[in-house]
Amino acid sequence: MRYNLHTHTFRCHHATGEDRAYVEAAIQAGIKVLGFADHCPQFFPDTDYYSNFRMHPEEAEGYVKSLRQLQKEYANDIRILVGFETEYYPKTYAKMIDFFSQLDLDYLIMGQHFIGNEYDDLTMYSSVERESKRLLTRYILQVLEGLQTGVFTYIAHPDIFNYQGDDDFYREQMSGFLRELKQLDIPIEFNMLGLKNGRDYPNPLFWHLAAEIGNRTVIGYDAHQPEALLDEGSYRRCRKILSDLGITPIGLEEIAMKTPRA
Ligand SMILES: [Zn+2]
Ligand SMILES: [Zn+2]
Image 1 (spheres, rainbow, N blue to C red):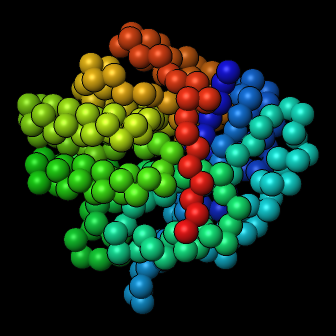
Image 2 (image 1 turned 60 degrees about the horizontal axis):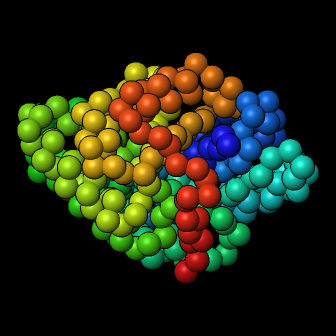
Image 3 (image 1 turned 180 degrees about the vertical axis):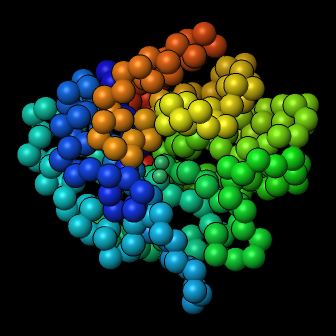
């Protein structure tokens, strides 16, 4: 059964299309379960920093309402789930969890686009090419610390950190990371958008290690336009790469949906 738990909406300011158009594209593509996980609002302390590539807090209620409405309307054709893709920032985590308690959500996925807390000085964008061993280790530690909270259903693009240093170090660090993820029983996402756009992820070496270690794997479309859900070519490429590695993506029933309540 085809499913996708990684769908964005226009509210993140870099995706396009009406919510309904995503639902209709998913039905057309034969997707049986469509999960929306738009970029979650973040709650930074008093600072000039405002991130413009995610939903603003005041948009969240309308997001949930619109999707719950579509869920009812299309109940016979598709199952819709409502969630968020979010960062784990130690300094703002408590406020975010507090915010979730006012919303009716089905799940959260983690996507760690930044190391640090995004608004503060030590912040780094995960996907910039770098050779820093120290930053690769920091990325891994921050993701693991976040996942230990137990609120995340899976980790999106776990291989987003664009390390360009030596392979031995990467292999050693990522093997440890993947073993921890397996221990925590967190499925890892093979990101279709990254593959389609030729980004640094999915990283072949990372996935080679994941195959060896036997991490449970999910394909995430990371759709930012309704048409992305109809991209059969990219979907087939994901399946082929994984199957060549001996990885069979898990079924939806094997995923423990975690409800992000305070
Ligand atoms: Zn995005
Ligand atoms: Zn995403």
